[in-house]
Length: 148
Image (cartoon, rainbow, N blue to C red):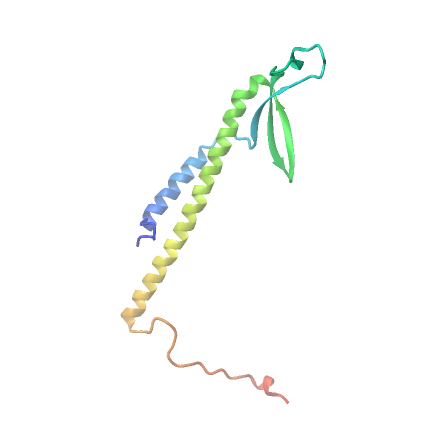
């Protein structure tokens, strides 16, 4: 049975399996933003004090949030390329996880809809009413609740 998006349960299961395979191939990852910085040293005679000068640098830092606080870590220039790859891999991982959650949610909805449709067909075959009973239920209280 197709979902509102037109996907069948089988298609969604195949997509989920493909995403699981991609997640299994995730390499080293690192959250955060890699930032290139130039700074001024504050010495009046230094080249960085001139108007329009870029300053000293670049120096690289990785910034991310940990426990509600911003944490910055200095990255050596020789590790910048590798850190870029780690950050990119983290972004790829986040996209895959987001896709996995969306696909799983669609699959759960499609499975429930298919089960509901199947139970409705079974009830129709047996001739039973599909929604509730036509006779109201009468509830009796136990002898203990009738005490005065």
